[in-house]
Image (cartoon, rainbow, N blue to C red; front, side, top):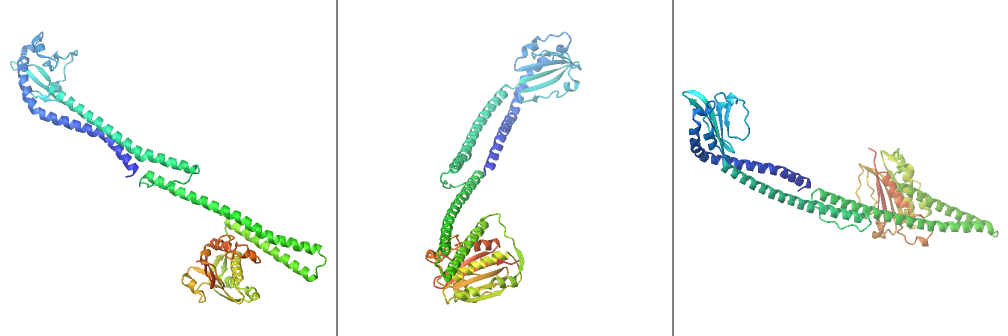
Length: 482
């Protein structure tokens, strides 16, 4: 049950309990009164007969009459009042001083000869005649002593019952509030305080389906998110530290080479023209490599910023993608690699041309580097039909949706990438080829990570498939402009 429902129910019960007991008391008293009416009617009628014999004397209602005999009849249980024919009070056994003001005539003639049974007394009023002429009135009121005692007893037991029920209800509510509210809130507060002070996250406890349970579950969910965010921040920090160290190392090597060759050009006068030209060419290559590293680092840092929004323009698909997959023949011919390129794209697309060219350049650079002499590379841009030259292991798992997307595919033959390395291939500075330090550097290790982020900025994605001793295939998906 929800705490709100339970508390409102308890509040309603506490409010209704006095009313319920009051109603029960009234019903109990009224039922007792009905039971006593018949029995007391005859008893009271007989008791009043002797009183009526005295009060029926017309002489009591004359001027100057004495009321000694009437006074002897009156006591603390019996009250007598005498009125003359005009309603003026002649005698009253009540100790309160009577005022000589006539009683209202309508009230005087009301309920004559009728025994009125009230909760506390019986009342009887009758006229007195003298030779057919109205002499006065008398009114007798006899206390119901047994009824009052019984009602008092019943009221006492009702109050005792009310007190017991109220104490039980209060104790139940206090116990419930302590067990279901105070204790749980205190435990939750302690868990929050411990977590805020940097202690290990608390183990999740079973939560109830009420408001505090929902609050507790929200805290556990928030705790998970904070722990995950901390882990990601620590991981990002470690990656940044590693990136700085790796790039510093990669920059130091070409910079040392540039300095050495530059000093040789300046100080060594015995160098031939051919050697000088070779040294200059090496300096230019090393400088270009350093520029590429710095450009990649700048772009990677820019893509990491949440506020960075890539500008896109509408391009004609046929013209742009035909340009995108072309101009790689000279690079492949230099390494004696067979290149198969094709473009079959129609429609308009919102892209950043410069960045897409950069993506394809990164993919082709990797493909050329990892393809042996005499190998084969395929590059294609497709929006209507799949390629029949895809590796079988790629065609078996990848599904194309040409109604919604256009695809850029770069596939190369080669030794491939181990299956356990594929999930890390898009991480910054990760290189499946661990022997890069033994070979001339060909890249920064940021190319695939930059390509992935650029495709995501285009609302697309990039996936890599590889099989050892067969080759690698990278598929970039780009949504169409509808």
